[in-house]
Image 1 (cartoon, rainbow, N blue to C red):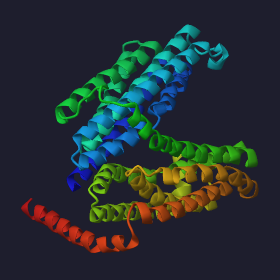
Image 2 (image 1 turned 60 degrees about the vertical axis):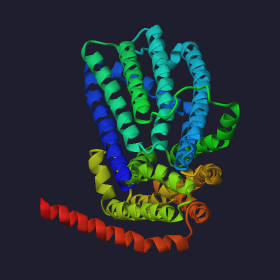
Image 3 (image 1 turned 90 degrees about the vertical axis):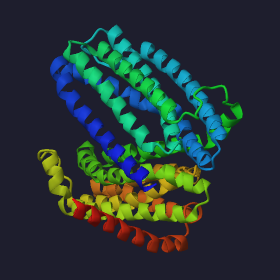
Image 4 (image 1 turned 180 degrees about the vertical axis):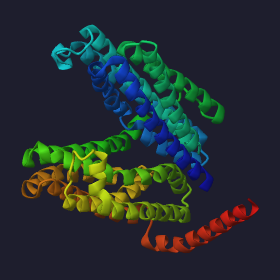
Length: 455
């Protein structure tokens, strides 16, 4: 298990590097080849696929957890049944979504693209249509990645996801360097994704030969059984968007637009710590699902303790550094343009700690498909935090918006800890896992010293 988790962490790091490198490479190539005006249009159009990423409507995530638990029990027939049912649900939702998206692309008023978009309106609509199809095609990879997770191959699936991004980004850059315009760049992006998905499919067939890729064994009953956990999955990003974007809107309405950049800059930099925890927490989730299926309470306790330790080791130092250096770091990052007040920085340092504990623990609840127990609370509390942010921002400006986020994360921490006692591990089981983790740490340190001596 440890090797799988470490491999998953490595694959996650590789994925982040590929995403960052691709973005850094494409910006100068596209902006210099097309000019800032046309590149600005591309940036606006390319945001559409990110909205279409919800096209699986949570089915892949919910099915992935259920498949992982079935695989841990040795029931490969159930895995195939769930996989094919979930894929049928994803294909059905994708067909409906792509139809609506294409109708929208060709019927929205031309004025929405600006007075002078830099391309004929027909080409703008064609580019948007291709990007919409790309977004729907990309969704199909989510169910295949779920199959990798279920087979204990999270690292392989995550690594291939990163390769797909590399393939499609390289295709776009090569096309633009050869003189391609947005329409051909969009086609290159779509072609790169299709090639990547074909490779993902072939790799899945090779590495998981017992998985039958198709739709014949899918059933409507299983699709309906997946609907409640899939719906709960969808509520979480909705609540996140409500909390993040709603707070900014409330701040702008209460204190003026000039107060928003100070808040968003501090919020963006504060969430880097959560991303660090995500690198470890994500590959741990399928292992936790398997432990739940095997009723391995000791394993569940060890993974819960690991989650808390990782959050402590990564986030406590980061929160302290953020509290001490966040203000000058934001000034340096924005070249002196944005000044975040120190009270806001201190408040967001507190948010780092609160969110850095409740969110990773909530993923363990998600790993057993019981996330419906907190997702509705998250939506409700996020909705309440927006008017609260408005009231606090009228009095304290950007710091008031940060305080509203702190209250939201504090409330979610209470909700998650209460649920974790019942759905993850009891405090007594957590305490019993401490000697086991200490012994593991000693053995790992001894192994590292032995390797050092041999080297």
